[in-house]
Amino acid sequence: MECDTAAKVVEAENITMAEENANHKEKEATPRRMSEKYRKPNVTEQHKKLKAELEENATVFEGISFASEQGKVVEKFMEQLNANVKSEVDYSHFEILEKGLGKDLIMVGRFNVPLRLAPIAHPIYDIYGDFTASSPQSDCAATPSYILFCAAIKEMDDLKQDQVNETKILLWRDAINNAHNLQFGVDFAIKHLKRIARAYIGFKAMKRKSNTKDMLNNKNGFVEDCFREAKYFLGKPLSIGLFHQYYSSITH
Image (cartoon, rainbow, N blue to C red; front, side, top):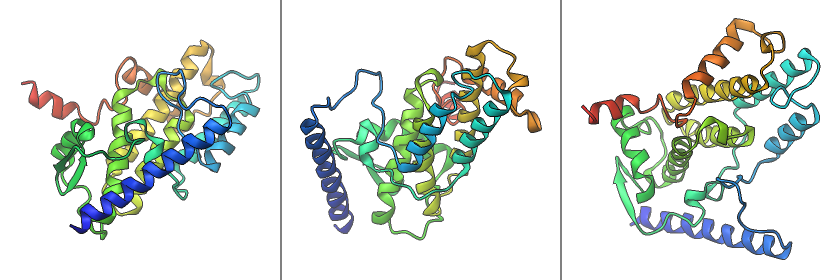
């Protein structure tokens, strides 16, 4: 009963937040939805600062003249990826959750999750088990972070590397770190996100068709890693690698 009450409170807060955001945007005569294939998320101040630096420096992703400057921007992005900053991520950042949890819930492990997240929550649980077991938080307190984590993985499953940007990747970082800070065992997701980031850098560099080895810092084979990951994820969902064992087992 307490969990149901807590879930309803969280859902009500997020619905209220979504309504307030919609009202605010209507006053500014700004469309609620964008025409892109996926909605750009709300961003934290850290995201805004990074994005401004990326645009100001005309990063390696867009092409600049000086290799040293390109290397600095890429290093800055990777530093941001590794940073465990205070997370401001919430349901409104994910299109699948922007209307709240809804009434159609299903039990996965010890959590009630929206039915639309079940295709992700089930294989995560089947492969990695109850990765929340090490958390001292109660089920009620841990549920929002668990749902945000599943929503981030769901977006990885829906998108390919040519459909993401730095802000999206950092949003996933925040959702994963949010779970990590509650002592969820999400090292597997942290490692996977770093692979996605390297693939993103490699993909953008490959599109420039230039000698990127001379432009990027190749410390510890970083450039080769970026190209290798870019080729691995090419044309595939960004969740590939997290679930391949699961899908192989159910198709044989």
